[in-house]
Amino acid sequence: MSEYESRRELILSPKMKMADLVNSRPYILNVLDRSGIRLGFGEDTVEECCSRQGKDTSTFLSICKICLFEGVVPGISELKSVRVDDVTSFLRNSHYSYKNVWLPLIEERISQVLEGRTESQRKVISEFFGKFKDELRLHFDIEEKKIFPLLEAMGKKGRGTKKVFHEEHTNISEKIQDLANLLLKYLPYEDSDPEVTGLLFCLYQLKADISIHSRIEDYMILPLLKGENDG
Image (tube, rainbow, N blue to C red; front, side, top):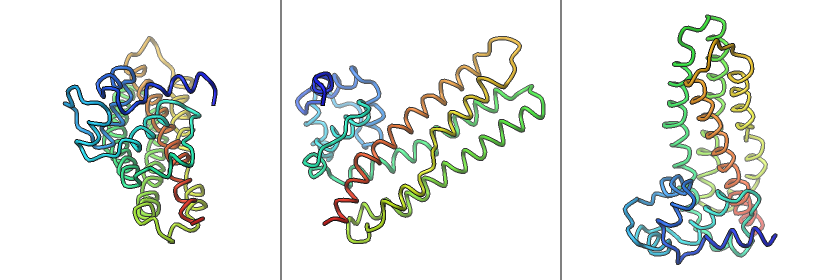
């Protein structure tokens, strides 16, 4: 690990105040929400906040590290201390956010952007988004039905999971970028359009969030399942 990476990880301390962590890295709000940690924690440290709300501090910080620092991977000893139920809960809540917050928001913004457009333009964008939405939901359904129960059991049924996991993991980020490119490159505009700009920002945010979600899967879930299989 580089010296720079070592320095930047120093902010992730159990003894730092949770409010300071959020203020320094606002994305942690997503981690709190998906970890089931309520706001209103006053002057609590990260450790105190997690303890009061029944969450494992080291697991929370491991998730924060993966979310904040691309390329930083938890070591074997760190993974051994992870509370699997907390990770599974985080991923389930992430799915809920994507399906019930992000997708309806993007769909509403697309509908606004397509108002007054030609029938062919509406058809292309609507059909592409419809296929993307179906693929995303299918990906989540597969994880929820095949992967999460194995994590929760963490037994011999995990054998072969890694293969299934990768076979079913469609490249959601590429689909989001394709949709952004349709709006960015190929939909003609007579003037600047703040609604399109807002939609594009939303798509880029979702793409970044999905990338973080994938890192949690690759750096925590797969090693945990592999470790169970090897055991």
